[in-house]
Length: 277
Image (cartoon, rainbow, N blue to C red; front, side, top):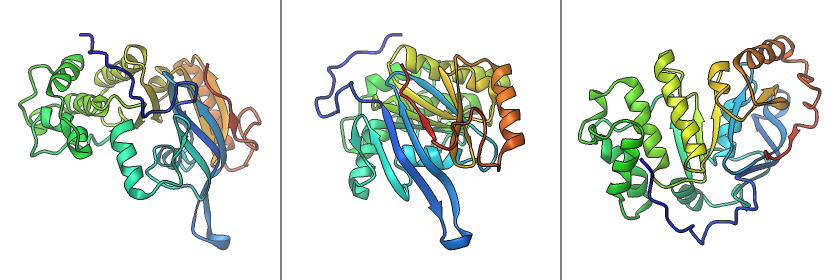
């Protein structure tokens, strides 16, 4: 089912800018000798309409990367830009409004409200943003994720895979510029995970969304246009047009060398990857 097209919002930055850009982003926790440096100077641009997977060994900085890029956490230094707009200096109120209108989130734990119906959960971002609740669009999105007949049910009446589909529909209801997905298939069986990844792929190919997905699964990463590998808080490598075997091989190498500060292709020191085509 094709979604209705709307005129571009004039208050959003022009498409010439990358969807997401990080400039010399560092994030540290604590002080002095006990400080933990989760990100060590990330320079990165993600093109609009791209699907990027982010991988790395445990403790590599994947979650911190996603939180900083999505405006959920503030870098210790550096800048994060969304569609060309620098967001790191925004007040918390403005940042909250931006996340509600321009960013979608999909998490492993679904984060659906059990007291609301499926359709009400999908409409929740519009409700929180104080705008008009587009029930017609909610129905279209539910149909797109295969849940057209489930709008009146509660999340507890659905399977885990169905709940994750609701979460994807909810993430798309505001027509966000970027969808951030944190281990979206981690709690799903193989078949259901494949279906959910297919929906994220469709959001990119058919709706023009930009998807940034943190995952530990090489099969999931292979649905993306490219994979970025983090190690020791730095961008260590990238892989274009990934396949599961190559992704798994890179992860084995990174895991074996993690902690040395120099991994993958040798770019870890600069932490720089260019914009996607």
